[in-house]
Image (cartoon, rainbow, N blue to C red; front, side, top):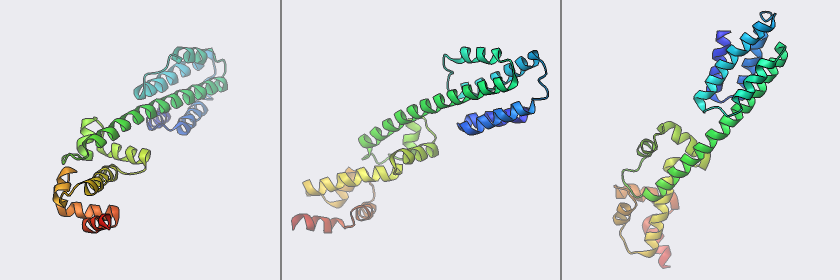
Length: 212
């Protein structure tokens, strides 16, 4: 049973509802011959409820329905009935946790996006610096940013820089290296490379088209 409880814990931490429900099925199937009396059924319920709810509580504080859920477990008279109750509770709590995590993730991503838009011209802006500012693992931030916005952190920051460069080319007579400084790119050659990659034109070609 301990190995099955461990599997359930891993599934809860991973947010995998299907695996959590499978683990519950396996736990109850393994104990089908052990639970012969009502007292033994209650002991199984207490043990499993403690393990499952504590694991979920690590992800997010449990809802106010926890006591109601426990009461339903303890009122179960048969193993199949208790298993059904556990699966309903697990599914409801896992969905609630998933929604809350998604809500918090969206909030962090919106703050990160706003920060990039306000600081894209900072030469020190990077995935590492932003992750540190928002207390997020850089790899995790990189993954969820691309999942949510459809572009990588670097692609988004570069887009902002290039759009600002285009505006400056249209509205000023600033040299390429001056524009590079204004958008937070130290190396003018790298700016020229990024600009051509983004627009398909060199800076001179772009300016000539503006004048034509």
